[in-house]
Image (cartoon, rainbow, N blue to C red):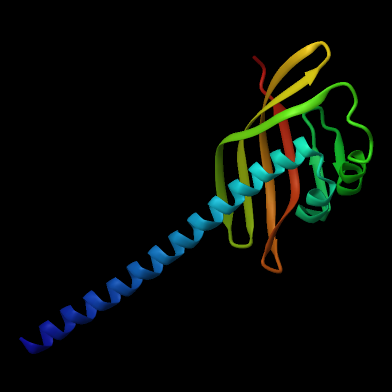
Length: 154
């Protein structure tokens, strides 16, 4: 009887430890998902503000963006574009939603939808897009290494 009780107790302890580790891993992944979704919202805010320093920090040196027509933009080109005046049409809002985060160790893929509002003297235009961003964790920080966006046809 004592042996069965000890064995049952051992099984209970080890299963509890396994559950605790799984819960801890899930909690860590949830925090990472929240952080990456916040980074996506920060990208939207930085786009509206034309915040060059933010993009210099968040984009990895090898960052490459592919637009819907297959055009490519490097980090250097993306950051340099913020030195130019905004022009007549200004980005008024950039709101990501419907985001999903998939974590693969030190790499994460974020997908979602963006609603962008542009304003000009001619009025307002709202554009919806789907995006995929790839992040790599380096020195404790998430860096954007690749992005793609495609317009949603209305």
